[in-house]
Image 1 (cartoon, rainbow, N blue to C red):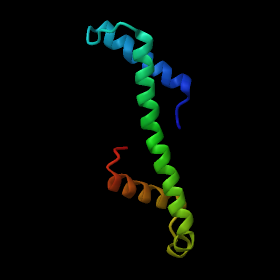
Image 2 (cartoon, rainbow, N blue to C red; image 1 turned 90 degrees about the vertical axis):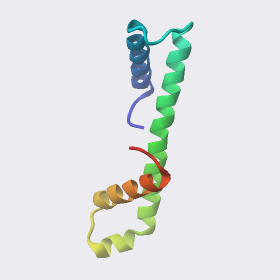
Image 3 (tube, rainbow, N blue to C red; image 1 turned 135 degrees about the vertical axis):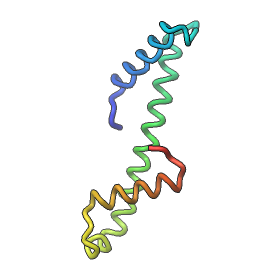
Length: 92
């Protein structure tokens, strides 16, 4: 995951504070809403982490083909990730 739990909590608090101060969000418990937003952000980041792991597994299986085609690991990673994301309906 690219963000720490502290960073996710900070972002969540900032979202709640901004929406609340603009009158776009009314709540009975700031903490509960912050926790819910942090959970959603974490879940979304985990989707990409799982996709990255799947891409690594695919690349390991096709390492010899990559060597023959003279494509760098980074280029192939990006191509496979984009393809898998499209197939799974994941928006990156």
